[in-house]
Length: 269
Image (cartoon, rainbow, N blue to C red; front, side):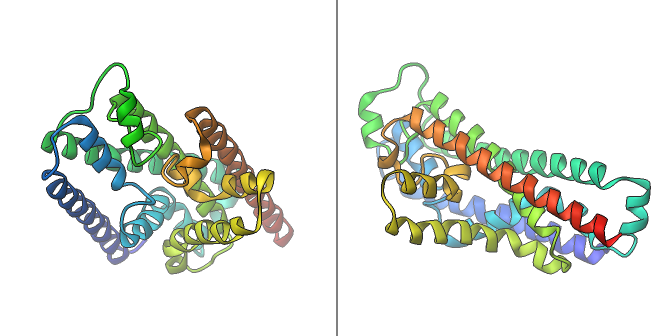
């Protein structure tokens, strides 16, 4: 990877961090006009999450988080010396390492962003509550986990970060068939937007079980559990079920694409 490309990417990451900071500070400024309590902190945090935050930040997240760990492996795959590299390291070893690193990096990157936002909001408004969850806060929440309680928000952060790791692997697996690095870099935004728009359009055609299946493949179910269509779940147990099913679908799709790519490369010799 050239130094110029690396410089541009580092610059983009810092710009992205700056945008996240500005978005968070603006939300805090607006929230400061309301009572300083745990529910206000919780509301502000969830209004900044995927599905509620601005489209620009959402697209940047879909692009930046997946490539944070996969870019190096994508560059190796598209380089002229890839076949000599594979002769020393098998396809299986290359892909295993790539998938693990991609998942962990996306997980950690997302985790850092969410904790950073929560810290800024908590310091500026009010810390989240410990102990029992106030039923009034549950009713006033803007998302399933938005109840002013620290344990609920920690659950959301862990689930969301895990979901981002799974999604990053899907983006990487699809990127195996893309030979242009520039397209690979923005592929997360294209794939993610498709996995949001298409299920949203199709959902109007189905009801019952088919509608549930559409919801499972919708990307927000994986990366922002409880943020969209909250009323559809009814309770957190159903939310966890849909999250697990969504994870299984995305992981199966990723492994299927990777398997197909390996077979394709082996046939090519």
